[in-house]
Image 1 (cartoon, rainbow, N blue to C red):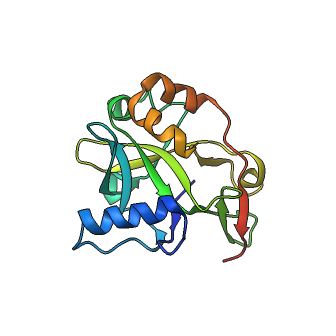
Image 2 (tube, rainbow, N blue to C red):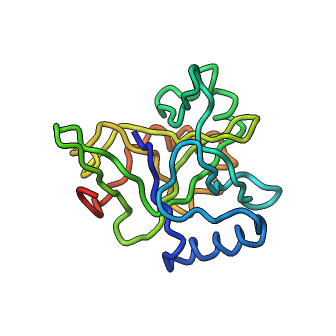
Image 3 (tube, rainbow, N blue to C red):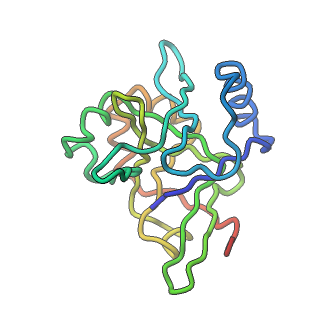
Length: 189
């Protein structure tokens, strides 16, 4: 679930424009992500800063056996798993995206793009490890996503991001709520 994200810097959403400005100032020698984000690539994530959210570039995925990456963590068990517990409790992050992709599993594999209705931005809840590598939290899918896949990313509203980053109690509550209804923006890409 959630093995590709959509990240288009040409979106004229204020949050994306502000992120682009921050990334260009903070990481002038690093190419800005634009298009699809893949596991293993460095992507901008929001982390807890001194008094406000900070933007950091981190690779997507924790290393696993045989060179594979763990890119997602189940919301239902993230706090219980020894490999995730400390990161979830102390190093939560939010990945700003313009959507995410899922593939159908009906025999004719098709790629579908999901976005928030009426918005160009999705904030995906995640956490990162001591080496500054992140994973995306997933939960049971609802609505249009459920028609394609059984899991979806845990979605945060923009106003929830600061609470997600700072408040473990709020973070636990987010993991227990159902996901929002998203729209299937494109089919058969």
